[in-house]
Length: 327
Image (cartoon, rainbow, N blue to C red; front, side, top):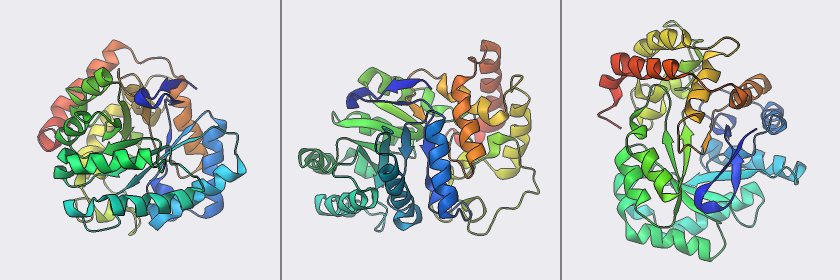
């Protein structure tokens, strides 16, 4: 699999990584042996980048990855985790003392002395403009608790604020054929600054797989049931903020753009990989088959210009009015 330079980190990571939210919580139940098999399958398919967070299953996702790292010490896996959501989302909670406690917990969960990358986990907007917060993050690097830091954001404005900070190594942002706004300013600015772009929610919570109908029912403990309108966290994290019924209709049209031999999900991942400035895309996987298929998207031929234009047209007609002004 293609390995791309991670900007200021001086490391290369697989262009298709693995998001591990689903191995912790909020996507229905995934048992431990299945989770470890997913991790192993992804690595065997060329994945070298895992993304997790300290709140995914209250640390379960990190702990599973830690177990896997101990079983495969020579696999060369780069692990990005996130912090900041263990306390109420108030700017005053983003302090050096809390950062130390949170990163110490993640280090223990993952079984490492130094975290490869820690990201602020979609904090209040004002945090991205706080000099004290970024000074504290610099201190974590100086103390060798973390090798580097970045941000995970909800909005383009938040991303641009973080990009203005010289120590920011990465920006994680929602980017997919149903969320094009980051391509206007954020991705070009990151590319210019040498900052990595991690594309998350790449399949719009599964919408872009083309497998759902308007009658699809998700488990009660699945965020696609309980967060459709932002009841638990930002609405943009669920179906990229697109209304489910409208999204299903748009996904049918998107599926028609898939080239021969590629699934709609692989087509969406291939589209993201092709965007200049993207470092890695992090689809989740609940089964080995999904992990293998996601990784295979990296090896597909580039989508032709006509397909790229069709994606832009689909977004303009069906999606832009719903999401563009919000994020």
